[in-house]
Amino acid sequence: LDYDTNVINVVDTPGHSDFAGEVDRILGMVDGVCLVVDAAEGPMAQTKYVLSRALSLGLKPVVVLNKVDRADALSKVESGETESQVLDLFDALGASDEQMEYLTLYASARNGWVTEDVDVAMKLATDENASKDNVKMNVLLDAILEHIPEPAVHAHDDVPSNESNDAAAYQHDKFSLAATTVGYDTYLGRTCTGRIYSGTISLNDNIAVMKRDATELPDTLPTGTVTGLFVNRGISRTPLEPAVASAGDIVTLAGVPDSIAVGDTVTGAANPVPTPVETPPLAPPTLSMDFGANTGPFVGQEGTIVTSSRIRERLMSETDNNVTISVVKSETDSEKTIVYGRGELQLGILVEQMRREGYEFMISPPRIVTKTCPDTGKKMEPFEEVIVDVDGEYSGTVVNALTGARKGVLLEMTENSSDGKTRLIFEVPSRGLLGFGPEIATLTRGTAVVNHCFLEDREFAGNLGVGLENSKLVSSDQGKATAYALASLADRGTLFIDPGDLVYAGMVIGENAKSGDMDVNPVRAKQASNIRTVNKDEKVYLPPAKRMNVEELIGYMNDDEIIEVTPKSVRLRKAELDSGARQRAARSKKKQQDALKQKKK
Image (cartoon, rainbow, N blue to C red; front, side, top):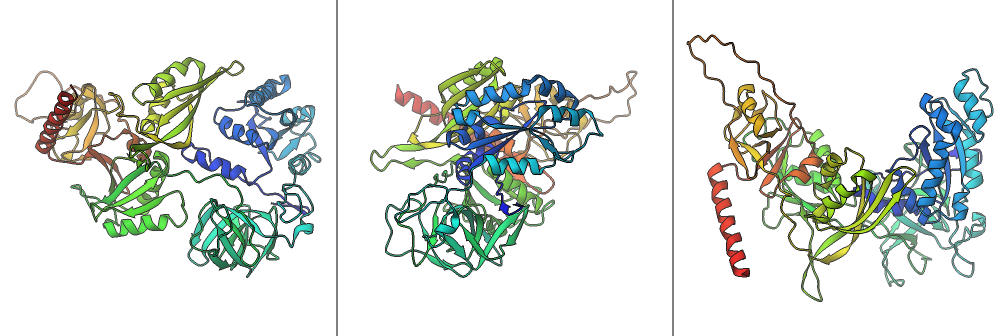
């Protein structure tokens, strides 16, 4: 953002828990934060996690109370209620004395005004004819320039590092840039985006890449030549003119070596820095899923791209710009491709993108990525830190949900009397978080905000408790579902389909209220006869079907099920469509479990 003779870099952070590992790396690019708060609603629970990370990194905040002109916000702004809530939030999150002295601005983004004076804000909110000459958006930009420190220059050689100085004095210093994101462009090749920490970079400069975990300068480094130097202006990426960037700038470089990864340091090939820039590690994948061609009865009817080779090509191309996903060919089935990711949402977004592009495919249940300890030989699994902000009345519900069958351990419980919220911190195996989001949203009526990030690999915690698998209603016939048949099935559980939906044998059409799967016939029609009856046919009333998106289905499905994804439909089905084969497999599994129990005795 160009403002007068200054350049203001504005960076947004991801807001979902599956991307919580990105927050620290994004915050490492900035020197301050601008917290935007709804003047009527006050600070929301989902802002706590990112704000707490920003405060812990020592970033200086500027608070903007937006939507002051709303009718329900006027009384809260005038009485200072919203400001008190923000102050209490900063205090609860452990802000320093300097951070507590933040600047508060009052704004209406829709009407285009910002002011530091609450009296002026109240007048502008209540009087449409009030003058707006000195309350334009430049007030916010001026406040950022005044209260947010300029980027620090990391100097090498004999100059003290981490000091804010005139960048012109360090133009000849060693160049270093920390790669925050890595991408691929069809015309430009491999690209990386990050903040320049020292020195300058120009077009056609020779560069080298240092791995983030390197402890000393290696003998040889991957090298390349800067073929493009870009910046983001608004939402557009444009070439930098003149093509020279210095310390403090956030730029995109083209022509970097293909071996670059997120967190690596780009430096000058002729005069490299002695050690890489310190950056947070890239969180490893915790989940894997198999992608393959659709094998259901309706294959090819709704999608245009159905072959396993085309599906694999699409998944491979996704890794060019999404460095947090890795794709490998399955060793056990040549028709399948294994995709590694961090959570249900991340994999669900990929599935939804492919679905909208015309792909038709199937995905397996998610599996946790396990390792074997090289020292002890024991099985290791990923553990995650889970932070839940929830209304105090539901805190017990959250504790029971995570510490029971899901094998979680409660570490900390903090109550905030100002807003009635409770913050709960757990350590939970990644396995225990599958399907937790939709479940806890239902149990807490949508008041829980969940954030989780990878901690470390620990020894396998044992099998999860009972009750996490759902019993299903499974179709035994193929055709269109009828209202007559569904009316008799509605009392047996929750239905996932409506009358007229196409079903086939082995497709899951609902959740069974009792334990165990049940085969049902949803296409059964009422028998027609020529016998007259006195009673008229009763009108059928059906509850609305429960529709789940891809992300919810990934956490909901059992181990013996797969998801069929097409551009028009998302269906849950059994991996084995034949009912008899499923029953034989269930009996065999039960015998094995009984044998293991007897062996333990």
